[in-house]
Image (cartoon, rainbow, N blue to C red; front, side):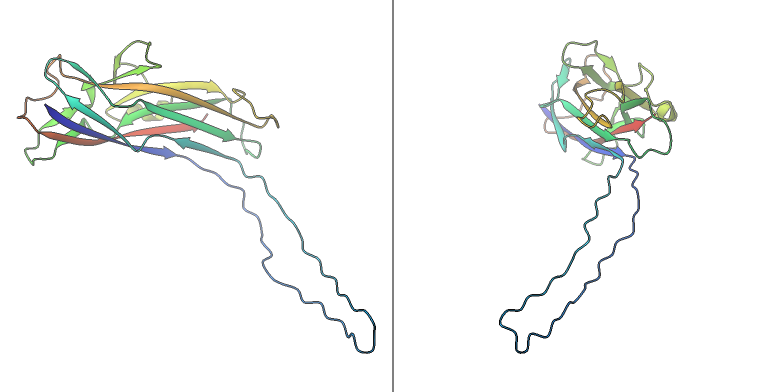
Length: 208
């Protein structure tokens, strides 16, 4: 058997509202000479600012055990969880788009220095465990700016009103993607037992 490691890195665009901070201190004194009781009073300003943003959570790593002639499933799904609060947005956002993608044609490279690769087109994704199994690159990403990369996989696109918070200004959504390495169609070269491939898949969440 061959073992392969696929690490995940979430790429998230963040925005924040800047505000001035008053971190100084104040001192209040009172002369209590000759008085039976003595007290002093100070005051502290409380300030809270609600900051808009978008947050993405993905697993650190997915492992595969490769067997020739099989569709080899990872040991856990790629679970992408996105939360957002766009109440302070300077523009109008209607959708949250989430996609997985590779930045090179090589999804994974052999760690033995041979230079052999598993191409990104050999990676298969399946939404929710029962959706169609699609190779990366078979379907256009929701975020069209990712079409310039070698291959992508659309995870979800939902309205910003999805699972709205009690305040009505934010929401959340989560999707599971089963990942497979396709060795049925000879997408990767045959390596000896114990061969290891490693690579990174990126996940992007964007407010559109």
